[in-house]
Amino acid sequence: MNEKVDMRGLVPESWACIDCGINTAPGVLNRVRIEQALAADWNNQGVEQTVDEWSEVYIVKPSVWRAAGMEQMGGCLCIGCLEGRIGRTLVPKDFPRKHPLNRLPGTERLLSRRGDVTFPSWADDSGRHGSEGDALKSDESPGEGER
Ligand SMILES: [Zn+2]
Image (cartoon, rainbow, N blue to C red; front, top):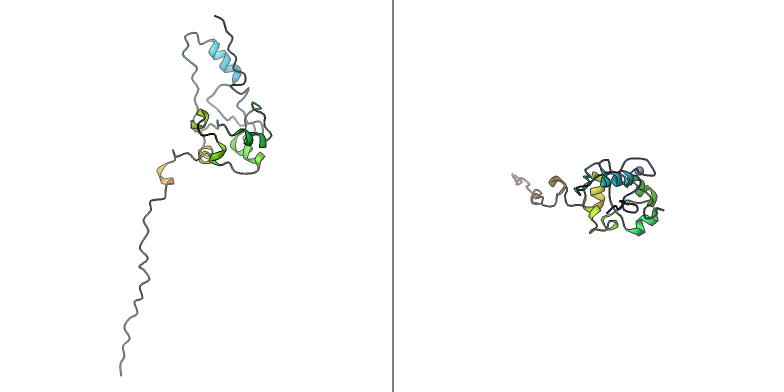
């Protein structure tokens, strides 16, 4: 068998943000490079891709992507430029939760938009114990009624 690997429509032509040019996936090959790598992968080992805390690889709902004026595989946008285009901050419900791309590590701003619970524990401030509201005891010294 001699199939040519065709990743068109699966992998972007480039991972660069089309607005600011930042590489949204420094550890990931673009389509042409993945095809080359897979073609050379005679042992079917797969091609290693790394997505780390410098990556902004994500999927938003089609309505959000359309609102940004983007086509399905129209390229990549970093979080900042996507938000600039839609004129608001992304919220967790903009990201289809079950999509595997939305479970990858990424930049802090991506994780915070996605509402990830993988945040460091210091970010969880809910179990804090306040002091009792007892400090305002009226403690007037007894008047010294001298007569
Ligand atoms: Zn950008």
